[in-house]
Image 1 (cartoon, rainbow, N blue to C red):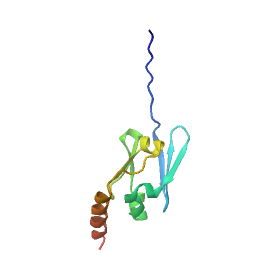
Image 2 (image 1 turned 120 degrees about the vertical axis):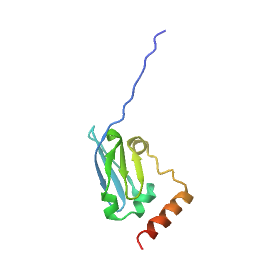
Image 3 (image 1 turned 45 degrees about the vertical axis):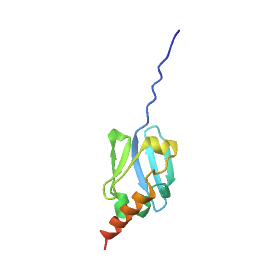
Image 4 (image 1 turned 90 degrees about the vertical axis):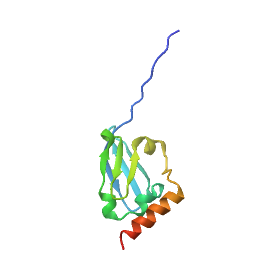
Length: 102
């Protein structure tokens, strides 16, 4: 019996844009994937400046926003996965985030 091994590889992120309502990611194969910012509450509540302060991480397979402690991977974006942060965790983060701004 012959068996084949199939290896799938994810495309890398080459550019990121964040608006008030959308996260758009350009990937190396030429596609642009856009998802609602509401999928990622920390980004939705971040200031425009905090949203602009990111870097492509994980050798091109993720994005990190240090000011809001948010990490999003290309796999989740491609599969349409929203943030899995619990409401309790998000509330704690939001309370401390807003406290730091006052």
